[in-house]
Amino acid sequence: RKEVEQDPGPFNVPEGATVAFNCTYSNSASQSFFWYRQDCRKEPKLLMSVYSSGNEDGRFTAQLNRASQYISLLIRDSKLSDSATYLCVVNLVDKLIFGAGTRLAVHP
Amino acid sequence: NAGVTQTPKFRVLKTGQSMTLLCAQDMNHEYMYWYRQDPGMGLRLIHYSVGEGTTAKGEVPDGYNVSRLKKQNFLLGLESAAPSQTSVYFCASSRPTSGYNEQFFGPGTRLTVL
Image (cartoon, rainbow over all chains, first blue to last red; front, side, top):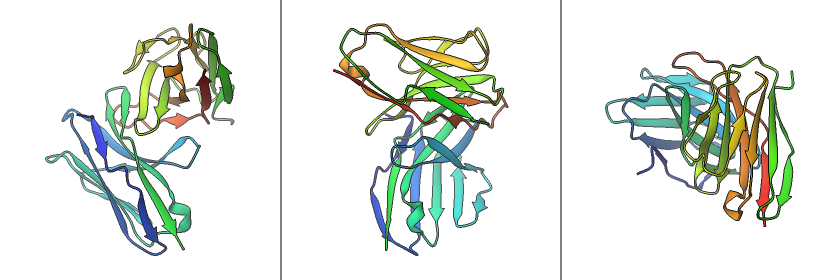
């Protein structure tokens, strides 16, 4: 079983749609959680951290459920520029464990 | 600040050849990492370093060696390249803050082994 599992997609949505990505992790000792964004043929970049209380950054909302070992990312009012792969990431001591990513394609 | 840079950006090797990938960061970060990314696999940690002169194995270290002689540089070596090492290689760096560990990535090196 992979340590971090994501639906690979692709999610094809029209502009303005709301889309949600889910992620599960297997190690209950995971300390902190993140969503990274990776554009095609580019390096990953931090999108946002994920807290148990939930956090919001503009159109993006991240949630963490430690009991279920589940992380989510909600994108509202999708833009063409949101098209990318979204990586679910968990922190174990000095290392980050990456999911394989969920691909999002937003079309006009 | 250039952030994290990687050299070279592209390389084609023949099986059995050797090469070194260079990663440099100008953010004074203690921690540095080498990953490989393959389709459908996500990023997998090869080796990492928590400070100058120290290195440790990650998830997929076989066939690779690393050195961290200077704080700002982290080198990844392939002694005898194999086709299975065809991949995109990313270097990253971070501060050693407990719990929160944002990593900053270089642009990647695309390596093909024939």
